[in-house]
Image 1: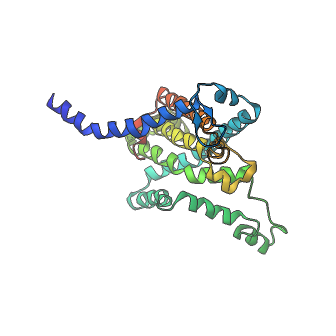
Image 2: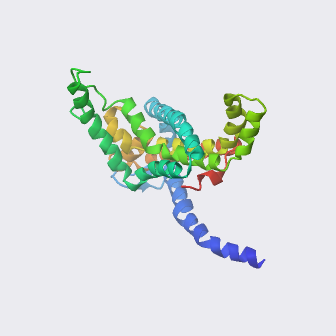
Image 3: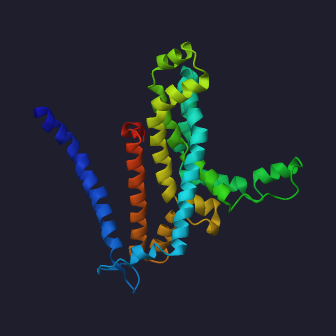
Length: 284
């Protein structure tokens, strides 16, 4: 009983913090989403309505949500294709090489994400270093349009979120029992067979956690599409920002946020049902 009481006291500050700054905030957003917009400007009218959620079904907003979902899925898929092999390589590397590779993954976190994405903007501009170099060596005659495209936004998303795929997979691969791989090879299994039957199942919890850590933020990020995609690539995160700061429609912005919360909950539930472990996300 003393140990349980002591554990409860140690957990009390975090529980209180979560209730006040997470639970109460989410409850407030949900409540605002059922209110009406104040015609005079800022604020809301405390009158119950379902108009904000009905508005989400309009074709224009549904199209933005589908575009955001596709962008999140494409970002997650590319992060898997690039980050999963890199994480396995990092787990297999020796001492110094492993530390170097881990440092390369962590170093970007030392710089503000906005600054790093703006750096990509400078590189991909029409008169930026990439186009200037390609024209200087004669590969192109006129600058290639890289900015304000879906590919630029996707590149920025993958660049900003790929560490969140690498580190959980690395955590699972690091804890993997290497003797199982050696046993599979000794029994005559081909390398691809060993990977599919041994390595992939053992690293699946980390892979699923990485998918959640990449998919969920990519649904809400707005500054990447602002800097690299322009006005043609509006995602749900951009809609929430615009409704709050430009249109001043707080209830509709809250409804959009609730929609993102629901999608996040569904993704995390699917991850747990598929065999993911929350312990693989403790690195963050």
